[in-house]
Image 1 (cartoon, one colour):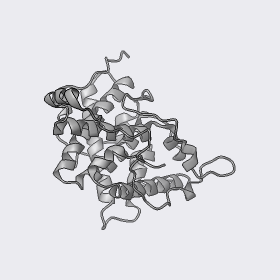
Image 2 (spheres, rainbow, N blue to C red; image 1 turned 120 degrees about the horizontal axis):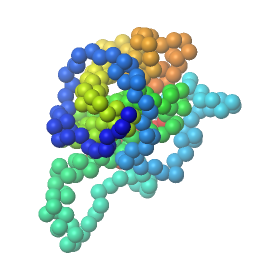
Image 3 (tube, rainbow, N blue to C red; image 1 turned 30 degrees about the vertical axis):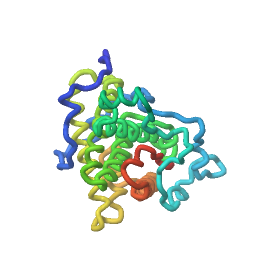
Image 4 (tube, helix red, strand yellow; image 1 turned 135 degrees about the horizontal axis):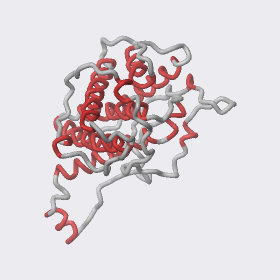
Length: 282
């Protein structure tokens, strides 16, 4: 099947407003099961050789990950240290160059928000595209699993940004558009050329359905294992079953702990401006 040119979606698709109204129920697995694995890297990803993910993993003597020992650490801010090579900050220009950039609206509120959203999404992609997260949770790197992990980390960031009020919601809208651009490229690179618009609409409905389910699972009145059930259905299950098997349960429980911890960590990170400097912990 011939692939398209991989360009950005049209303006009508990228300016959709982000909302949380429940969508019609779709079969997640049926909708994306035939899409092959896309290219591993995206233009947004920033790599650093300074970070060795193996240092954060609890291993058995055999080299296997000990899931029961993972994600019990105390939550902490996800802000990167000031000397981290992975920090992404606005360039500081002075003199004539600054005047020209100001005239070109480089320092406008919208331009700044777009740069912040780009930086935040680069952190999401760093976490979702690196092999460690698939190794820890024993996930095969397919379009389905990558999409599911993208949705989780987008939800984590959007949930945190909503806490900042109107300004955070506006930044979240730019972040959602970055995600939309990237997702269309991934779908296209996976070989979907025909009916691309239909697939994007279906994936959008799945995205909103997952967001609503994750939000509901974090409510005080929610059941203790509700988040586990949502993660099982959205990430691990291939047959539509509602509960994980005994073999899969430790994996689902570990990811549930990971999500809950990262939720608290993001709350401790501070104002939304600092979210452009975060690093998810694994």
